[in-house]
Image (cartoon, rainbow, N blue to C red):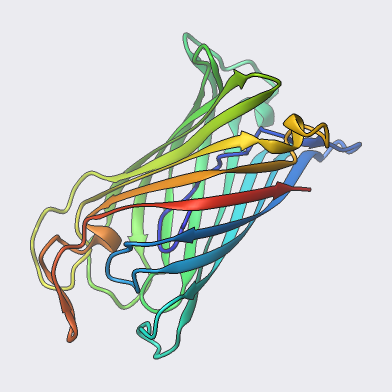
Length: 268
């Protein structure tokens, strides 16, 4: 991403490059490592390097997405714990009512109906639990398209009420020459809580696509194994902090983030 403190259920890559496995319970899985270098981040130090581990898998009862970001700040700036690095992650299983019941629940563009859960964890006051209904959609041209809705409940000491979040997740592949460009990503849209109480989690919008060229396929090393590209990150009211609001003793200013990072991603 940089997925730092984002809600990612970025299941981007959830179906892309999945490796089939011979098991009735575990149907397929895919793992990846991503390196990102970016500048102009808000609230956190402006220059960052991130290494992200991602796991995606399909099961007889649903699917699972998990990631962990390890972030290194490239300046003398420190985070809230007084050091130059941090971490963040999400654990996101979904239960498929179609798989569990053994029935075809598709109708119109809907392929399946699910129950989605996410646990967000990391340094300082970022922990949260999210639970709600989801659907997988069959949209022409897309590799996959999910629409997850959540009731978001903070479990940290940060004040705030339960709020609703809408999270579409997608992947789209465009053939280019002898290879492909993959555009995948997510949007986290917290649609309520516009009350401007100091320190309370605010409504926010996080748009985070990746544009990746399949270098492995172009170089005949194997498709869906090695990508290069960029990740764009727009986050209005980052971390749920209202733009121009109080952030810390050392920062009062814009919390609207608009940046991009260079990306290298390897699947295994």
